[in-house]
Image (tube, rainbow, N blue to C red; front, side, top):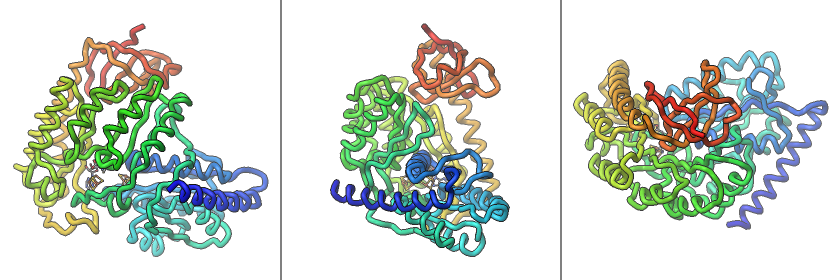
Length: 463
Ligand code: SAH
Ligand code: SF4
Ligand code: F3S
């Protein structure tokens, strides 16, 4: 396996050298500039950082707006229809950039670019786009760009290769203190509403040693927060609880988070590892999707509300304040108002610190797309509002449990519109604001919570 990796790396390096040469000829006076923007989940954002790493090695610089770029790459998400509509809107707007600068290359990649219907639509309607490549093709990035620059023709790459993970490509990371690290790629679960298994392929896990080496390197270079990523880390081939314990043994002051965790195989062993590893945040993002067993079955989630509540109560038997967050889909085909109310009931029972809720979006090619759907979008929108109101009440009550306590916060930014205030997240992932200067960004602080606001906590630094 490692031999394969080495061979592939040599091939990629040859392609990089060829592209670098071409870029030097084309831009003899300056470096070409790329605008790369990632949409969707953290996995996609992390892929975007890797693509940037490759582009930087080929000789590109980066900019924050599309206007003056030589290369625009939109790293897209396909999870809901509105995510796709947004991308088509943006590509439409870029037409005038291409008209003003015919040398400009516009490309799209990521999940939406893996769907064949996207390639068709780009070919027929969006002639300004010259590069479309899916989630498997990043290894061929240099060759694809070489082809577009030298032949000026539309390059489409939606191949699904063996999915071999290439180790050793470096990323250009956005943050200097918080880093995402993929532990696995793809998904085998085929929840009936979800496009991800179709655009990301089957599950592939990185070895524990590869993950360990990357995380140790990040900690040595000063990173304070490690977010481990996978569509379902519980099916990590080499055992996720064991991986957490291995990473917890790395020396240094840092916090480990991870997402996502599928409830069907969230085990007591996982909870034990979270509880026992001092560097792992005491919280779990456990997407429940809905609170009704009939709908869960239709969604092909393979757990019941009772199974789910068992994990919650086990975690809380070990740590009273164990924090949960979740994802909810409102208005799955055939869902009735009574069934929706069971979801409201569940979120009240669990007491989530955070929920991410979405109106169901039909994805063609999935099982649910063939199901009868009688509820109007307007109705679904009203249900979503109802759910959010329920959650607001619950979370406000929950936040007050921190008042008077001292919590550890990794400060990550200034508070916009509040001069002299910075904020960050505590172990449970809750935002804490405090008075302090920007110099604190990127470091941990002990903060005494003095007040629970609507959606965040207010505190002061304890020396
Ligand atoms: N693998 C992760 C989820 C990735 S997608 C997991 O299973 O936890 C993130 C969230 O988007 C899902 O949890 C789900 O709530 C939502 N989602 C996925 N497909 C959707 C669809 N077709 N319509 C609306 N929301 C969807
Ligand atoms: Fe989609 Fe289900 Fe896989 Fe999550 S586990 S990515 S919701 S199919
Ligand atoms: Fe993520 Fe969207 Fe793809 S949620 S995996 S970027 S479809």
